[in-house]
Length: 296
Image (cartoon, rainbow, N blue to C red):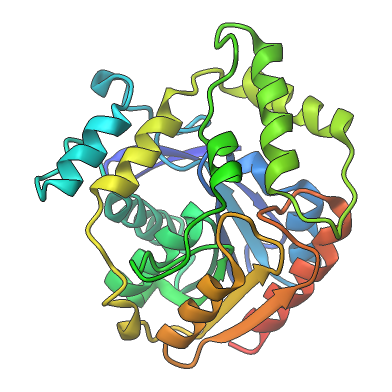
């Protein structure tokens, strides 16, 4: 792994494959480090002829933290947003897209293929709107345009996703919550190994035990300006990749995204929830993303 300075901050990244091949940059979602993109998935894309780059978003993993801001007050942020006030936050998703654009530029990857999942898909849309020059193609995975008319997340799943561990000081309590969250957001089509997933969480905690940045990542979304009216400006060839069992963003959300972005193509994976982890899911995602990128 390596660290670069991009957009004035330090970002940790890792690469797979031949640097001479076209680049695919993977943008991870909320609550995950770059390791959230499984090695086998990255290696599979590299085997298809791509230089794969995964990185820690700001304030997560080994990238620069914004500890001086302190823990995010999400309730206060929502209250400010509902009142039409400027949300007090150290950064927004727009800044995170600026990070991504700078990473592509500093590493001389561009124009690059970019695939983002969940929050990473939102960041990818901001990149496509504000930094079209660095983008060769976009893959938006299990994400949303944020249009107010879209169906909401499943309330029970959302409650689990945003719950806290019983004992934030106990790593095993954090592991237990991680297992509970994944069980809630996964689909029925792909088997998973809870023991293996627990070991992955433990490994991530050893890599970076500071979890407060994830709250600030959430606050970044609350503070960011609405962008749903701008997605029609996206010119990059776009694939919208989604699972038909996603409990956070129902299929109608993906259908809206594909309809709103000119020329976008929608591909639905049967049995997939809000997940990229299971090994049996990797070949389907690799085929969809590599196929899209090879055409562009």
